[in-house]
Image 1 (cartoon, helix red, strand yellow):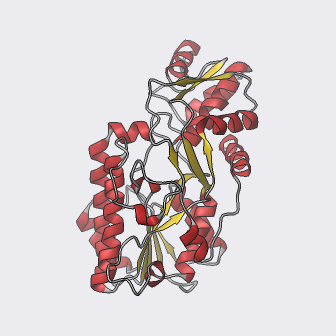
Image 2 (tube, rainbow, N blue to C red):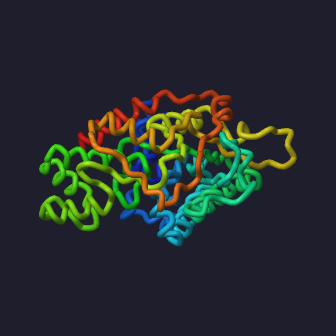
Image 3 (cartoon, rainbow, N blue to C red):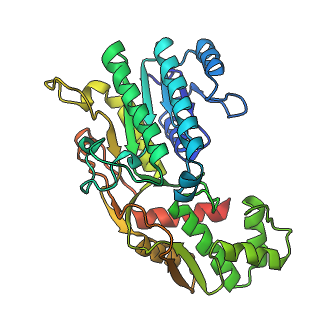
Length: 357
């Protein structure tokens, strides 16, 4: 991949895409192409076709997706499977038709079975049932892997699939209804500290940036405390869904971006499987740290970083989800890349970024 190669980044404003854009720029890539959702609806087949015919990118990074936390995945099941499959089908197929030299498809480690052995190896894909809460999203991502794999085998394309673990970093989603666990904890614990210290200007500023169910900074104090309480944020306690016992792995988004660009620059589809195998499958690559932490210990780490003095209430009436999700990163390490940012350093950087926005 040359520095002047035209690279289309789908989903350039999200957590994943924005980190990849910054990494590419830092490495000297200058011919980057992107469109906002209002400019290009990736679920619209005809619009995507016209875009590819006009732009003719040499490389495509498919980071666009409908994403969300456990609540959103469970509640908006049809939206998650429909929108993600449409996005993938349109971008991958047009990449083939327009002769894209290399495509990187980003999925998620939620593709793995609910009760698979830990750490999760790539070969465990499709060996047993998925976690129910995010099954539609996972099925969409599995379809994307198989689409890339099948196009490579039938048409000789060079489409590589990567499965990042739980990501966090700049431009993350802090919507308390739809965000992932780490940014949600950072926001809830931060707001709890603000209540504790009577920092109403900080609370109002936070709500102006990210309203909760229509409640903004200009709402009265009773409305604000009521909505925060609904989401488990109080002066003396923070409610967390589940028991706190499930263990999760977290990867700093800028590390993920570095892994993606490394693979684009240095590895091809042919590097993802044993050429002696007659049945080629599980060609995707896990991207993670190989280190996990319980939700309870993650909350404690964030609490210490934020400076919150209250307690945690674990709501065991809410689902825990899979008890452990840890990737086996042997394949990625064998291809020459390893993570750099520890969880402790990442939480420090994440909270600093949140305060600066």
